[in-house]
Every structure is written in structure tokens, then in C-alpha cells.
Image (cartoon, rainbow, N blue to C red; front, top):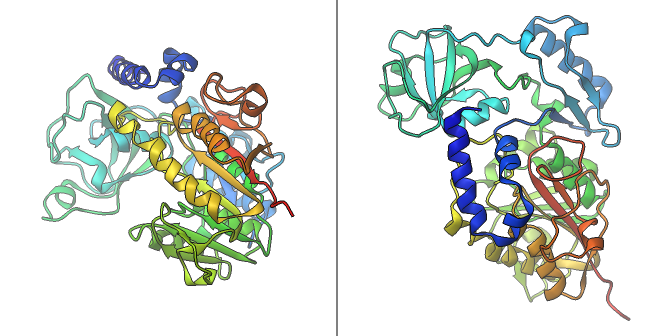
Length: 443
């Protein structure tokens, strides 16, 4: 870790945690910074089980990695089906000896968010490029550096010399400087095809119908919801649609799955469903999930708002601070904006509770590490809505909830917390989930 990055993150999290008293007591600052700048040890790929199984997909991934990295079968990283989630394939990292990590003279400077994405296994897309040397040609081998300080101005054409410059990997230039900066309008597409990120995270292309790259906790989240064919299910904050398509696959594309998000995001959900050959159960609607309830009787397929007690199961993956995403080199939120998330999350919960059928289940989840967005919200649900009860999450891979955040010992062990400070053996992003049941109506 660079000294600049360590200092920046330490200062940023000191300010954040000082404004969140409960989290400050439960999270070690040193462990947090060390954990935050590293990518998860495994890449996880979710098979599209509507069309394929592991026997189809495992060999294709292995062949792709052998060609991409010029490896023999014996040199491949671990590629295996998860022990209890059969649609999940885990792929280990390449070791340093298998990577080409010697920097070359031709350099490309990217912003901090793009640099972190490279370590997660992404290519460099044109909007993330800040600078490129004038003589870099398409097809040239380039080294990618992230500007951690956000001081490099877009269009920079010299060699960038700063302590905040961090080498993140090598790749092949897909666009030249003229294409990136002299066209008069924002350029799109891949600017650098990354071949060797310093994290060792594997890069591979697969036909879209095989499945999708997806974080392991997100898969556990949908498995915890346990959707069944023929059920009526609501995904309240559905974009980009990875969890939606996973729910649909477990439903075998049978039943009704309502996916809601804002107008700018709904096309992505529809596209992802089409790519994975989901044809029947998903109905995607534009809507505000804080305003989904109607007191009148309505047909569910007409779209929002919906009548109370409509859904068998609800996935509530709420908007959050995103402080569980890793690696991350720059943090957009501050202690002021952090305070806006719990009230917003509770607005979503109010709708979900009314829309859930008695006897139905809801999964509340975030990709945040802060208990104010997690355990504290669950404790509020249990106090505010006596008809809701916390039930064990299965499968259970995450560690218990944080102490002194509103949940008792029994309740802490019913939720799942992934990432920093948990007992999970899986090195993942930071993630939280809780499964709740609406008690059946008394007769």
C-alpha cells in the first residue's frame, strides 16, 4: 500500500467513524484500511442455470484462462463449484510469477475509481482516462497508473510525476490520445484492455448466456430469500439486475417477479434479463420504491403502486453508502451525507412491510460496513413493526452482527455480516443481510 493511500484512507475513515459512535467502537481503523485497499481473494461467477450447469461452464472458463495467460492446465488457479451454492464458481488469483507486472514506458493515467475497478478485474473505459502520452498507439502495451489525489487534469499529455501515482497493472491500448481527448464529445468504450492487474484477479470473457460475474454475498443474499417457482416476488431496488436474474433463475422463470428502479436504470435490467434468456417471470417497472403502496385493489401486472399484502417474498437491497465495496481508493461519502442513508432506508422498509403478505419473507441487505445502515435499521424494524420477526438466514456464511448496535446476542447470530471483522472464511466485499418474516395473521 502506498503511504499516500494509507494516510488518505486513515484520515477519511477517522472522520467517518467519529461521526458514527457505534461503528467506532466495533471497527478497528488499522484493520479497516488494510482490508479496504485489497481485492477479494476469489472471483465468483454465477452460472445461468436456466441454460447451463457447471459441466458446461467450468471447462470454458479454464480454456479461456489458459489462452489468455498462456498457462498449462497444471498452472491454472483454483476453479471450482462452490460446496453448497451450485450456481457459484469460485476462481482464485494468479500468483505474481504468472503475471507480467514490469512497468513499460508508455503510461496511461486513470482516476482513482477506475484504478480500483482495474484491481477488481475491470478494463479501463474511456471516461476514466485522465492522461496519455502523445505517442501511445492503438495496440501498444501500456502501464496503467491511478491518480489517487484527483489532481491530474483530464487531457494530461506528459509523464505524470506525483506521490499519489499508483501502478495498478499492464494492458493493451485500444484507443489513442486523439480518440480520447480530441473528438469534441465524451468517448465511450474500452480504452485499455487490461491483461495483468497487480491484484492477480483473473480477467476473462464469457458468452453472456453462460452467466455473470457477481459478488459471493450477493448470491448468498438471493439464496437466503429462497424464491420458488410460481411465487410472487418483489425486487424493490433492482438495477442493474444481477440479483433479479438470480431470483428468476431460482424461480425457473415461473411466477411473477416485479423489478423496480428509476427510469434511467430500468433498461439495464431488461437487457440483462434478455441476455440470460429470462422471458416470462420478470416484469420491470419504473418507479420510486419509497412510494409503492396503494390502499386500493390493483392488478399486480399493471405495475406500481401495489396493493398491501401482495408479495410472497421481497428483496430490499437498499441504497447505501457503499462503504463495503473494495478495493476503493477514493471515498465519495462524508459524515454529513452518511446521515441521509438510514432515514431513506427506513422509507423503503415502510413500503416493504405493507406490501409483504402475512407469512411472507423479506431480506434486507446493504453493501455497507456501518452498523447505522445495518444492525441499527434491523433493530428499528423489530421495534417499529411487532408483526415482523428476525429469522435465521440460510445458507449462513457471514459472521454475526456487530455488538452494541441494537441487536441482542441471539439476533446478532441470525443476521449475516461479510467482510471486515467477521468470522467468515470467505474473503469478500463488505455486505450485510437480514431475513425477516411477517407473522401470519391471527384468525
